[in-house]
Length: 130
Image (cartoon, rainbow, N blue to C red; front, side, top):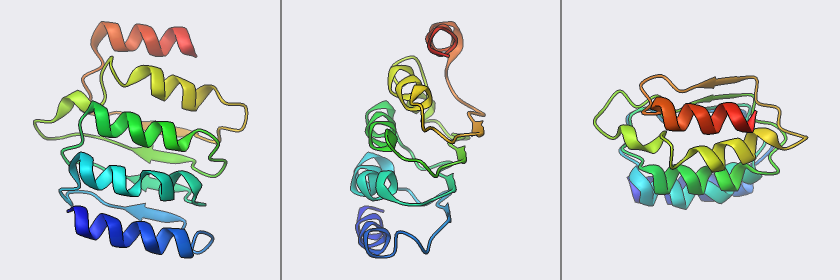
Protein backbone atom coordinates (compact mmCIF):
# COMPACT_ATOMS: atom_id res chain seq x y z
CA UNK A 1 0.00 0.00 0.00
CA UNK A 2 0.88 3.67 0.23
CA UNK A 3 2.78 3.44 3.53
CA UNK A 4 5.02 0.68 2.18
CA UNK A 5 5.58 2.66 -1.03
CA UNK A 6 6.65 5.73 0.94
CA UNK A 7 9.08 3.63 2.97
CA UNK A 8 10.47 2.04 -0.18
CA UNK A 9 10.84 5.49 -1.78
CA UNK A 10 13.03 6.56 1.15
CA UNK A 11 15.14 3.42 0.77
CA UNK A 12 15.57 3.98 -2.97
CA UNK A 13 16.54 7.59 -2.35
CA UNK A 14 19.30 6.58 0.05
CA UNK A 15 20.52 3.43 -1.67
CA UNK A 16 20.16 4.27 -5.34
CA UNK A 17 23.21 2.37 -6.56
CA UNK A 18 22.53 -0.76 -4.53
CA UNK A 19 19.14 -1.86 -5.88
CA UNK A 20 19.04 -3.08 -9.48
CA UNK A 21 15.87 -5.22 -9.50
CA UNK A 22 12.55 -4.19 -7.99
CA UNK A 23 9.63 -6.58 -8.20
CA UNK A 24 6.45 -5.19 -6.71
CA UNK A 25 3.81 -7.46 -8.20
CA UNK A 26 0.47 -7.66 -6.41
CA UNK A 27 1.28 -5.09 -3.72
CA UNK A 28 -1.86 -2.97 -4.06
CA UNK A 29 0.17 0.17 -4.65
CA UNK A 30 -2.57 1.91 -6.62
CA UNK A 31 -1.98 5.46 -7.83
CA UNK A 32 -1.10 6.81 -4.40
CA UNK A 33 1.67 4.27 -3.95
CA UNK A 34 3.16 4.68 -7.40
CA UNK A 35 3.10 8.47 -7.02
CA UNK A 36 5.02 8.10 -3.76
CA UNK A 37 7.58 5.94 -5.56
CA UNK A 38 7.74 7.71 -8.93
CA UNK A 39 10.53 10.22 -8.29
CA UNK A 40 12.73 7.70 -6.47
CA UNK A 41 12.28 5.15 -9.25
CA UNK A 42 13.05 7.78 -11.90
CA UNK A 43 16.28 8.79 -10.14
CA UNK A 44 17.34 5.25 -9.29
CA UNK A 45 19.78 2.91 -10.98
CA UNK A 46 17.12 0.22 -11.39
CA UNK A 47 17.62 -2.14 -14.30
CA UNK A 48 14.48 -4.26 -13.82
CA UNK A 49 11.07 -2.97 -12.66
CA UNK A 50 7.95 -5.13 -12.33
CA UNK A 51 4.67 -3.54 -11.29
CA UNK A 52 2.11 -6.13 -12.34
CA UNK A 53 -1.33 -6.19 -10.76
CA UNK A 54 -1.14 -3.11 -8.57
CA UNK A 55 -4.35 -1.33 -9.55
CA UNK A 56 -2.48 1.60 -11.10
CA UNK A 57 -4.60 3.81 -13.37
CA UNK A 58 -3.54 5.94 -16.34
CA UNK A 59 -2.94 8.86 -13.94
CA UNK A 60 -0.45 6.91 -11.83
CA UNK A 61 1.27 5.30 -14.81
CA UNK A 62 1.65 8.66 -16.56
CA UNK A 63 3.27 10.06 -13.40
CA UNK A 64 5.70 7.12 -13.30
CA UNK A 65 6.56 7.43 -17.00
CA UNK A 66 7.14 11.17 -16.65
CA UNK A 67 9.53 10.48 -13.77
CA UNK A 68 11.45 8.00 -15.94
CA UNK A 69 12.40 10.64 -18.52
CA UNK A 70 16.12 11.05 -17.98
CA UNK A 71 16.56 7.61 -16.40
CA UNK A 72 19.54 5.93 -18.04
CA UNK A 73 19.51 2.52 -16.40
CA UNK A 74 16.09 0.87 -16.74
CA UNK A 75 16.35 -1.96 -19.28
CA UNK A 76 13.35 -4.15 -18.39
CA UNK A 77 9.87 -2.98 -17.44
CA UNK A 78 6.80 -5.11 -16.88
CA UNK A 79 3.47 -3.46 -16.28
CA UNK A 80 1.12 -6.33 -17.02
CA UNK A 81 -2.28 -5.76 -15.52
CA UNK A 82 -3.88 -9.16 -15.15
CA UNK A 83 -6.64 -7.47 -13.18
CA UNK A 84 -9.59 -5.19 -13.81
CA UNK A 85 -7.51 -1.98 -13.88
CA UNK A 86 -6.48 -2.31 -17.51
CA UNK A 87 -6.81 1.38 -18.23
CA UNK A 88 -3.33 2.17 -16.91
CA UNK A 89 -1.70 1.16 -20.19
CA UNK A 90 -4.04 2.60 -22.77
CA UNK A 91 -4.25 5.45 -25.23
CA UNK A 92 -4.19 8.03 -22.41
CA UNK A 93 -0.82 6.74 -21.19
CA UNK A 94 0.84 6.47 -24.61
CA UNK A 95 2.12 10.07 -24.93
CA UNK A 96 4.09 9.68 -21.67
CA UNK A 97 5.37 6.23 -22.73
CA UNK A 98 6.44 7.53 -26.15
CA UNK A 99 8.25 10.50 -24.57
CA UNK A 100 10.13 8.12 -22.27
CA UNK A 101 11.05 5.73 -25.10
CA UNK A 102 12.09 8.54 -27.50
CA UNK A 103 14.77 10.02 -25.26
CA UNK A 104 18.28 9.54 -26.62
CA UNK A 105 19.53 7.91 -23.45
CA UNK A 106 16.62 5.48 -23.00
CA UNK A 107 18.06 2.04 -22.27
CA UNK A 108 14.75 0.16 -22.37
CA UNK A 109 15.21 -3.10 -24.26
CA UNK A 110 12.20 -5.07 -23.00
CA UNK A 111 8.77 -3.61 -22.33
CA UNK A 112 6.04 -6.03 -21.26
CA UNK A 113 2.59 -4.59 -21.91
CA UNK A 114 0.74 -7.90 -21.57
CA UNK A 115 -2.89 -7.46 -20.62
CA UNK A 116 -2.85 -3.79 -21.55
CA UNK A 117 -5.71 -1.87 -23.04
CA UNK A 118 -3.84 -0.28 -25.96
CA UNK A 119 -6.27 -1.14 -28.74
CA UNK A 120 -6.06 0.74 -32.02
CA UNK A 121 -5.82 4.31 -30.65
CA UNK A 122 -3.01 3.45 -28.22
CA UNK A 123 -1.11 1.35 -30.74
CA UNK A 124 -1.33 4.14 -33.33
CA UNK A 125 0.15 6.66 -30.87
CA UNK A 126 2.92 4.21 -29.95
CA UNK A 127 3.70 3.34 -33.57
CA UNK A 128 3.74 6.98 -34.65
CA UNK A 129 6.01 7.90 -31.75
CA UNK A 130 8.53 5.20 -32.48
